[in-house]
Amino acid sequence: MAKEAGEAYLRALQAAGEAYAQRDFTKALEKTDLADQIHPGIPDTWGMRGAIYAEEHDYGKAQEAFEKAAKANPGDFWSAYNLAQLIFMEKQYKEAASAFDKLMVYRGHEDLVEYKIVFADVLAGDDAAAKPVLDSMKFPCDTPAYYFAHAVWGFAHKDVKDGSYYTRAGLKVFGLEKCVPFYDALVGMGWVAARDPKDGSIPEQTFPDQPSTPDSDTGEPFSNSLQATPAPAGGM
Image (cartoon, rainbow, N blue to C red; front, side):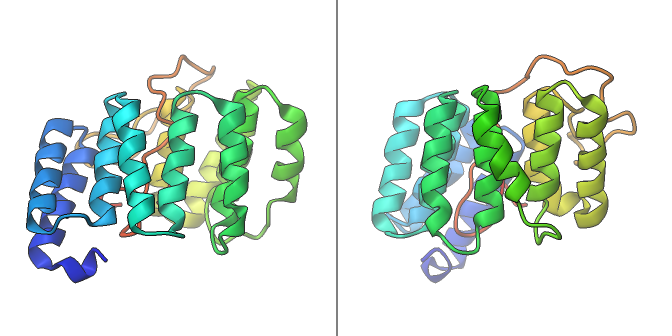
């Protein structure tokens, strides 16, 4: 739908994504409004709007926007994913795990969904639910999800060596670009160092000796059907 809305719409939405990535949510919302003026009612616009509201902790508006995106594009994985991610962001971890589990019906996204189930259950303190999912994840894998699910398990259980090992392995196998949303989720939990805001690179001294206090409760960026995340970079 978004690609059919024309170049002007896509440029406005891309600008919104870039501002979102830079955490300039005022500008991101302005560009989202512009995209909506150019071509109203596109699901991707609602998805972007929901992601911005969520980052501003306006969860009611975020949910409304994500629901409108889902209604405008029935059966779309990313719309359903964003609604589950919102529950995760609100720290309702068991409810989030259940919402992610329902997404297993969408083929082609199993790795991501399993990663999110592990993440949510671990944060809920339900290792008994998380461990079987973690152990069943496919390897070799097509996405960084396997590595980062194991990193989450390690860091959450204060095994920094194990968490760091799997994070490094994921980055080595898939490269930073594909790992950004997974890596940033660890940053949000305070488990690894934030990327350089200028060029997005990972600092040399990335991994802490001990887990720290989370800087953010987002878990990771929200996603839409145009790209893995609203920022110009799904996933996750």
